[in-house]
Amino acid sequence: MWENFFSKVKIKKGRGTPVCLANDKLLDETEKAINIKLPASYRSFAKQIGPGEISPFFRIFAPNEGSKRWNLVDFVQSRTQLLAIAVDEFGDIPRC
Image (cartoon, rainbow, N blue to C red):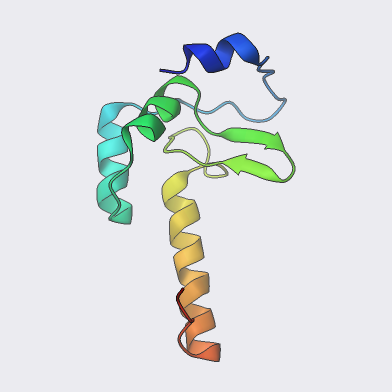
């Protein structure tokens, strides 16, 4: 699925802590933990490329066991907690 992507860009490994790529078991566990069905394209990306940073402004989170920094479950849970704090502080957030 990502062969065309790899043919057009150069991926450079960073100096940070390496992370393990996701597998089907880890992706299934992640779906249960965050209560979201992950799209097939995202599952493929997580298994072939994994999490990382394209620039300081574009970060990709994916299930991984190698680093909490890029772990999708930790990211979703931390944002859920922040949202709960905001709702407690400011009331319900308007939806479009």
